[in-house]
Length: 254
Image (cartoon, rainbow, N blue to C red; front, side):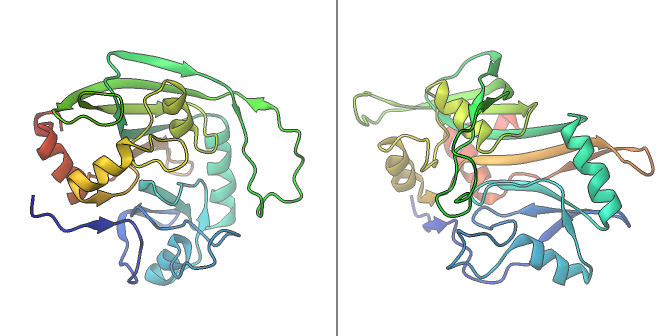
């Protein structure tokens, strides 16, 4: 296919794409492979979104939500503590609409709502002192099938390879919620090393020369806590996503 293998590992200091910036907020398009901030799991990492955007705009920033390292898309920061507290409450009160897109294994058709409580999985290092008796918490994700594709290759026990392009609207924000919900439906996200398919993932990486989690935080929509304007921030699909869409015949659905 003549493609260059593209890895999600960040090896050079990136210049972050700023999607929105006023005196209260800054939002970036976080690339796949970039941690939001330092953690117990980042011993070999050099770059973090929080430090990068702080240096880029010359101002301290406060995270108000998070994206997993392999997830790309809209990441919002507050520019002072009061705004950070206000936005934390907006997220807590579910007064923000988050839109994601994912490519999953198999044909997941139609639309529906996944109402499946999630028990928080603790990190061996980061959650070392947390209570091990964690109860499952409410987790709700609405989904809609946008497109499907079938490739004539036998992988594992299946005679063909099938993919779905899904639009996802998480109502709650549990850790790995979308990834775990789609795995629960037996339609795991392509490139998910934690909850995905260990036969489909290698095929996708080899066939498309692309190794990353196919989950993108496409937009955030909320009422600005100061100006009261309705704000919608979008992160367009990058060239890797667009190349996959072209190969699978999904360009008309964008």
